Length: 158
Image 1 (spheres, helix red, strand yellow):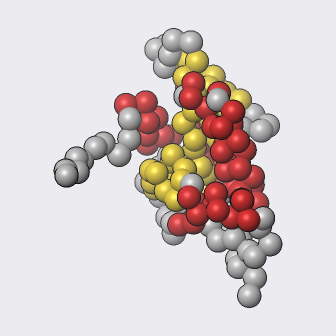
Image 2: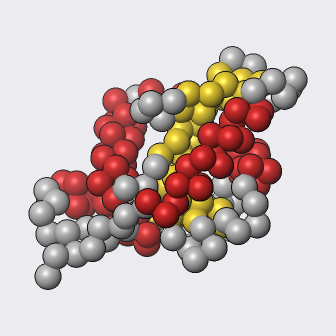
């Protein structure tokens, strides 16, 4: 029997992380592949299926403030996320993050070199080749990071 080491992230995630690094200042940190239960707590009123998902799910990227409090989650979407099972997992994750008060942005490469950043209420397109829309994408990420003071984590009900 053998165990092999593999990369933590794929090339697409690597490019996204490089982009995110250019969008935030040094008072923020980016963490990859973070389990939901590492930065959120649930109360006892969560339904069983959602509770199980909570303990087995992770996010692609988590941006925290200088005090390591969550500001923003980014999920890197691929064509795989178009399958019904993946859509259901995305729905559950979005619900849990909404309950926790942590904003969620999705990123997806569209066509050739168009980065699509979106959430429930906003969307931005950024051309990775020409740079058109880069400031809008950066401003969207910065906006959510700056709103970090309003992030409220759920505290367990004892």
